[in-house]
Image (cartoon, rainbow, N blue to C red; front, side, top):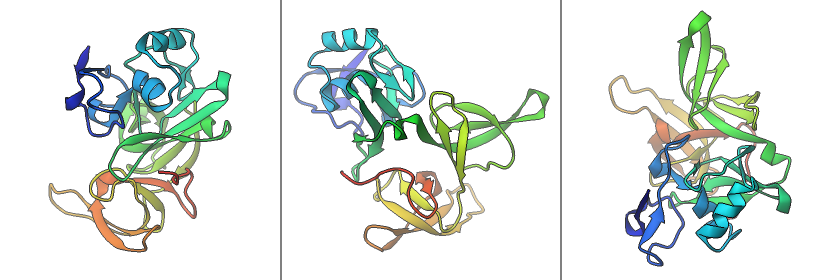
Length: 235
């Protein structure tokens, strides 16, 4: 039900010493370490409400949407690139990550709130020989072999229809989602395939500093080709 604030995952931009306990996330599209419960989003980050009691009322009234769907659970896990909408107040946000790996809410337009980016983690063949794409936010959709592992899909929300595809390849723009370069945006310069159990390595040129660095493949999330599809400034 709850956990001590001092033991919260580091990805939450929430004070640890104000109270002893904090609401834990429920099982859902994101794991515990990489997500934040919806109550903390609307109370501690967006300041929509002041107390948990007010949060219960607002959520029960269906005023908060995540990826275009009404969510009423205080514990619903909100993660990277999710879209949080408050239509009654004309407020829309995309969940991003800062340089310390902490999640924050970046304001976006109503039009941008109609889609999100998802990474293809793997593919499986289902009944009838159809190809199922398994995405980083827990979504499973039918696709084809035109989509490769680690490609990024631009999906409409809440319909989850594929609008665009951004390939995992040299030259495309990426956001780093882990490690010492967390939150940085750069361009893939080279991909080193490691013929062992070790992670493949990616050489990235930072868009901000112009410096090159290596990171593991799992930390690389494609966000565009010539220009980033998401707004990354502000934090």
